[in-house]
Amino acid sequence: MTYIIFEVKKDQIGKINEMLKDDVVNRQSVLTRDAHALGIDKDVSYFKVEGSDEGLKRALELAEEYELKKLDEKEASDVNQKILDEEDSAADGMGMIFG
Image (cartoon, rainbow, N blue to C red):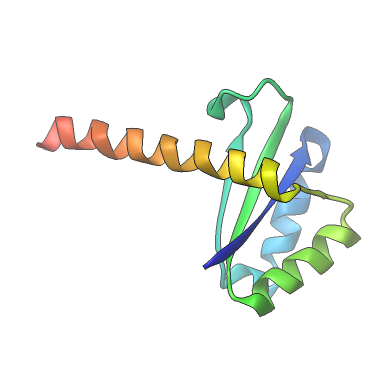
């Protein structure tokens, strides 16, 4: 699956909920992460949309309408890797608890 990551300023957080009201976007795999939780020194959140071409196209349309910044390929890849590392770390922690 392909994905897009948007940078969302604190005063734009409500725009994520607006995007999720769209039926096409809402059927995609979505997640939000605070930059600080990922070890990134920015006062923003990241909104990742992963799914079909149609879903990504619709997310781009809405993001443009709501003036959300789409990350370029390199920055999106870096943020995505941090998200995956965080998920792996959480999974490892659960394994230690329930192992």
